[in-house]
Length: 188
Image 1 (cartoon, one colour):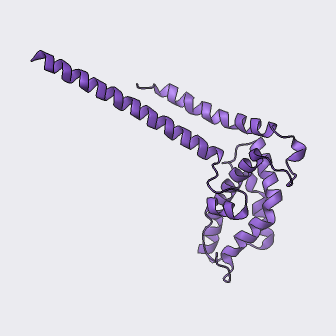
Image 2 (cartoon, helix red, strand yellow; image 1 turned 30 degrees about the horizontal axis):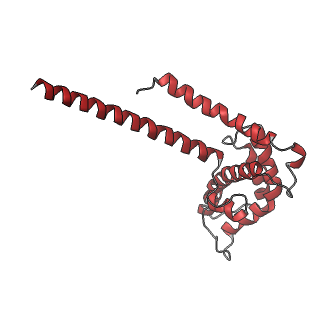
Image 3 (cartoon, helix red, strand yellow; image 1 turned 180 degrees about the vertical axis):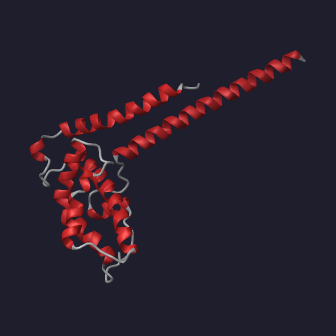
């Protein structure tokens, strides 16, 4: 079955518009007064912190790579400033996700700075290594092993949907071939 391109684009738009609604729904599950509290972190907060960490560390990775290649480094003040503006990344959905990103930065700012600074410390094992977002966030404790972010869930769902569509199309082609071959056999 072939889907018209207007359906495909509207389907993508529905997914994109669903992400902010999903984030709002997740954030509605716990009151805003508890968001900053590190003592009781809900599963929704953990998922959003992981999402924020991966987005932030991917952007930091590019900056750190450029600095390492140029044999330069940020001062501590510049590094902290760069971390502070991380939540302005255009890849982060606005609104609730940026709020959770700010909560994440508040909680992990010093740890992120320490881990990033190791990339230009000749005595550190991480010297001149790139930042791999999944590993970096797991090491920080922001993500659990095999944790899926919202974007990863959406990508997996889109891939599954695409695979199912291809499977249906293949079955339709096979059915059509069988019908055509039966029709030719009856003509003889």
